[in-house]
Image (tube, rainbow, N blue to C red; front, top):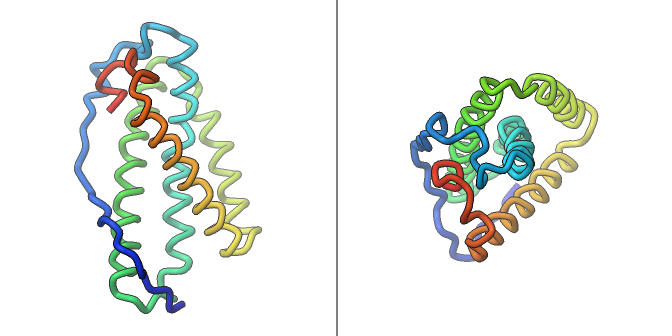
Length: 158
Protein backbone atom coordinates (compact mmCIF):
# COMPACT_ATOMS: atom_id res chain seq x y z
CA UNK A 1 0.00 0.00 0.00
CA UNK A 2 1.60 3.23 -1.09
CA UNK A 3 -0.76 5.70 0.49
CA UNK A 4 0.92 9.04 1.02
CA UNK A 5 -0.34 11.81 3.25
CA UNK A 6 -0.72 14.78 0.92
CA UNK A 7 -2.23 17.25 3.36
CA UNK A 8 -1.03 18.83 6.55
CA UNK A 9 -2.26 17.06 9.64
CA UNK A 10 -1.42 17.64 13.25
CA UNK A 11 0.45 14.77 14.89
CA UNK A 12 -1.43 12.59 17.31
CA UNK A 13 -0.42 13.57 20.82
CA UNK A 14 -0.08 10.80 23.39
CA UNK A 15 -0.38 11.82 27.00
CA UNK A 16 -0.32 9.82 30.19
CA UNK A 17 -3.70 10.66 31.60
CA UNK A 18 -5.10 10.32 35.10
CA UNK A 19 -8.59 11.71 35.48
CA UNK A 20 -8.96 10.83 39.20
CA UNK A 21 -12.21 9.05 38.33
CA UNK A 22 -12.35 7.37 41.73
CA UNK A 23 -12.96 10.84 43.20
CA UNK A 24 -16.07 11.46 41.08
CA UNK A 25 -19.44 10.83 42.74
CA UNK A 26 -21.48 7.73 41.89
CA UNK A 27 -23.93 9.76 39.83
CA UNK A 28 -21.43 12.11 38.28
CA UNK A 29 -23.76 13.79 35.80
CA UNK A 30 -25.72 16.37 37.83
CA UNK A 31 -26.46 13.67 40.44
CA UNK A 32 -28.80 12.15 37.82
CA UNK A 33 -28.72 8.32 37.66
CA UNK A 34 -30.23 8.18 34.17
CA UNK A 35 -27.83 10.63 32.52
CA UNK A 36 -24.88 9.14 34.37
CA UNK A 37 -25.65 5.58 33.31
CA UNK A 38 -26.46 6.65 29.74
CA UNK A 39 -22.92 8.02 29.37
CA UNK A 40 -21.50 5.10 31.37
CA UNK A 41 -23.07 2.72 28.84
CA UNK A 42 -21.21 4.52 26.08
CA UNK A 43 -17.97 4.27 28.05
CA UNK A 44 -18.46 0.51 28.39
CA UNK A 45 -17.96 0.10 24.64
CA UNK A 46 -14.72 2.05 24.39
CA UNK A 47 -11.94 -0.19 25.80
CA UNK A 48 -12.78 -3.17 23.60
CA UNK A 49 -13.63 -0.84 20.73
CA UNK A 50 -10.20 0.79 21.01
CA UNK A 51 -8.52 -2.64 21.02
CA UNK A 52 -10.58 -3.62 17.95
CA UNK A 53 -9.44 -0.45 16.14
CA UNK A 54 -5.81 -1.28 16.97
CA UNK A 55 -6.14 -4.82 15.62
CA UNK A 56 -7.80 -3.53 12.45
CA UNK A 57 -5.04 -1.00 11.78
CA UNK A 58 -2.31 -3.55 12.51
CA UNK A 59 -3.71 -5.75 9.72
CA UNK A 60 -2.54 -3.11 7.22
CA UNK A 61 0.59 -1.84 8.92
CA UNK A 62 3.03 -3.98 6.93
CA UNK A 63 1.56 -2.72 3.65
CA UNK A 64 2.46 0.92 4.31
CA UNK A 65 5.64 2.19 2.64
CA UNK A 66 5.39 5.87 3.59
CA UNK A 67 7.48 6.47 6.75
CA UNK A 68 5.34 9.44 7.80
CA UNK A 69 2.17 7.35 7.53
CA UNK A 70 3.90 4.53 9.45
CA UNK A 71 4.66 7.01 12.25
CA UNK A 72 1.07 8.23 12.26
CA UNK A 73 -0.16 4.64 12.50
CA UNK A 74 2.16 4.04 15.47
CA UNK A 75 0.89 7.23 17.11
CA UNK A 76 -2.72 6.19 16.45
CA UNK A 77 -2.10 2.82 18.11
CA UNK A 78 -0.56 4.52 21.17
CA UNK A 79 -3.44 6.98 21.37
CA UNK A 80 -6.07 4.25 21.11
CA UNK A 81 -4.29 2.21 23.79
CA UNK A 82 -4.26 5.27 26.08
CA UNK A 83 -7.98 5.84 25.48
CA UNK A 84 -8.67 2.19 26.27
CA UNK A 85 -6.77 2.43 29.55
CA UNK A 86 -8.72 5.53 30.61
CA UNK A 87 -12.05 3.87 29.84
CA UNK A 88 -10.93 0.62 31.52
CA UNK A 89 -10.52 2.70 34.69
CA UNK A 90 -14.02 4.09 34.26
CA UNK A 91 -15.41 0.61 33.70
CA UNK A 92 -13.61 -0.67 36.80
CA UNK A 93 -15.23 2.12 38.80
CA UNK A 94 -18.65 1.09 37.46
CA UNK A 95 -17.91 -2.52 38.41
CA UNK A 96 -17.05 -1.40 41.95
CA UNK A 97 -20.43 0.35 42.04
CA UNK A 98 -22.16 -2.95 41.27
CA UNK A 99 -22.77 -2.51 37.55
CA UNK A 100 -22.71 -5.76 35.50
CA UNK A 101 -19.75 -4.61 33.42
CA UNK A 102 -18.38 -8.09 32.69
CA UNK A 103 -21.72 -9.28 31.28
CA UNK A 104 -21.69 -6.48 28.75
CA UNK A 105 -18.01 -6.58 27.85
CA UNK A 106 -18.01 -10.37 27.41
CA UNK A 107 -20.69 -10.01 24.75
CA UNK A 108 -18.88 -7.11 23.13
CA UNK A 109 -15.62 -9.09 22.98
CA UNK A 110 -17.46 -11.90 21.18
CA UNK A 111 -18.86 -9.46 18.63
CA UNK A 112 -15.45 -7.95 17.89
CA UNK A 113 -13.83 -11.40 17.72
CA UNK A 114 -16.52 -12.46 15.20
CA UNK A 115 -15.89 -9.36 13.09
CA UNK A 116 -12.13 -9.92 13.09
CA UNK A 117 -12.31 -13.62 12.24
CA UNK A 118 -15.32 -13.77 9.90
CA UNK A 119 -15.09 -10.48 8.02
CA UNK A 120 -12.42 -9.20 5.67
CA UNK A 121 -9.65 -6.85 6.77
CA UNK A 122 -11.13 -4.26 4.40
CA UNK A 123 -14.51 -4.52 6.14
CA UNK A 124 -12.89 -4.15 9.55
CA UNK A 125 -10.77 -1.14 8.61
CA UNK A 126 -13.87 0.48 7.10
CA UNK A 127 -15.75 -0.13 10.35
CA UNK A 128 -12.84 1.41 12.24
CA UNK A 129 -12.83 4.48 10.00
CA UNK A 130 -16.60 4.87 10.39
CA UNK A 131 -16.44 4.53 14.18
CA UNK A 132 -13.56 7.01 14.38
CA UNK A 133 -15.57 9.51 12.34
CA UNK A 134 -18.54 9.00 14.65
CA UNK A 135 -16.44 9.58 17.77
CA UNK A 136 -14.86 12.66 16.15
CA UNK A 137 -18.35 14.03 15.49
CA UNK A 138 -19.35 13.38 19.09
CA UNK A 139 -16.21 15.08 20.37
CA UNK A 140 -16.76 18.06 18.09
CA UNK A 141 -20.35 18.32 19.31
CA UNK A 142 -19.33 18.21 22.97
CA UNK A 143 -16.51 20.71 22.47
CA UNK A 144 -18.56 23.15 20.43
CA UNK A 145 -21.62 22.87 22.71
CA UNK A 146 -19.96 22.92 26.12
CA UNK A 147 -23.32 23.45 27.81
CA UNK A 148 -24.19 19.81 27.02
CA UNK A 149 -21.70 18.51 29.57
CA UNK A 150 -21.51 21.48 31.93
CA UNK A 151 -23.30 19.55 34.71
CA UNK A 152 -20.98 16.55 34.46
CA UNK A 153 -18.35 16.19 37.16
CA UNK A 154 -15.14 17.82 35.87
CA UNK A 155 -13.05 14.65 36.31
CA UNK A 156 -15.40 12.71 34.06
CA UNK A 157 -16.07 15.57 31.67
CA UNK A 158 -12.35 15.77 30.89
